[in-house]
Amino acid sequence: MIRERFLVYSINAMLIGLIIANIKIGDTSISTYISVIVLSLSVIVFFPKRLKIDSLLRVVLVLILVLSFFMALWSYFWFSELGFDFSSFYKNALLFYLYLFYFLFVGFFSKENPAIASKSYREIGKFMYLTLQINSVFVIVQFILFRLFGYNLTFPWSISSGLFSSFRPPGFFSEPSHFAEYFLIYVFVFGKEFDLKDLLILTALSVSSSMLGFISIFVFIVYSALFGIKRKQEMILLIFSFVAFSMVNLLFNPDIRFRVNLISDNSFKLRFLKFFYVFSSLSTKKILIGFGFAQSGLAINYYNGPYESLFKLLPGYFSGIGNNLLMIGAICSVIIECFLFYYFLRTKGIIKGLFFAFIFLGMRLMADINFTISMFWLPLYLILMNYYSLCFVGEKK
Image (tube, rainbow, N blue to C red; front, side, top):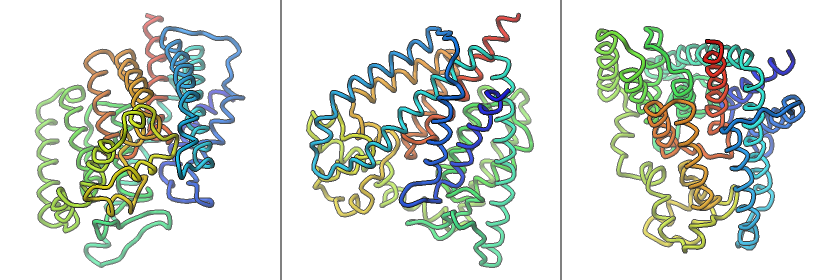
């Protein structure tokens, strides 16, 4: 019973950490502290009494060993880099391995207790959907209060304005993009048939002025068209809603118009192009081995192109894929990406697996979802729980 409840509460705690990620203790996000506590306790709670290792978990064990070998090999080069921050390196290295071992423990537990894993999976799905609905109501209220009355109703940990916009309602999330990422994780893991209640969430995402929010709506429509809609009327309603959201925002939401106009300006350069400019200026050795955990900002020292001053404003700001490559290099990153494709194909089948793999890749190209944060690992944990639950149902039949 303790292990069952801990599985639900530990993942829900990390999901809450995503919402309040901007609250900091010192210079570290409270989300990191939540993850460290939860993941450390999981070693005690989930440590397997007996090992049931199938081919999937065997691949994870091999992955841990191979990555550990290469990272130990690279450490000499990482530590000798000028400006290397040992404190942030060890903290993020610890996080990476805690997330990785938690993945292994969730696999052991779910394989040994598939019925419990199935129940926990459903409970977490209900929690996520309820969170999305409540936050959607709050986002719409924030939007109305600001646009009609000029009143900015936000929580202390929320960021409602940015470098390139005046107001973007985040609800009780730290920022609108985190709301969009949370929704994408839900669609990604708990993809279901379209429901009229989903329109509330889609409306909130559209008025949040987050470009990732619009992309998440588009992904949801594509997913629904391929896997989740059985009646043509629902598909027509969904497409009409997306077009209506887009037109209303472009006509009446100045932040969206402003951000669309910035597609070729600083926002686009920082989010999408910065990694390619910086990566192309590195030596072959640096490309292959990287700079170490949480050290991707050191790569800026090797770039002296036309956007140098802009890039140095936020030296560690890269997409998730960019951060992974700059942290552990191309060799280790390719190993992880190959594992992810194998993992999605193994757990979701060929068609859904490829769709999920490319969507997850796209998410990490759009936002800084790298493997030292919970946003990267949470969908992998939940998919693993569901996989062993379905295997159990198949065995019963």
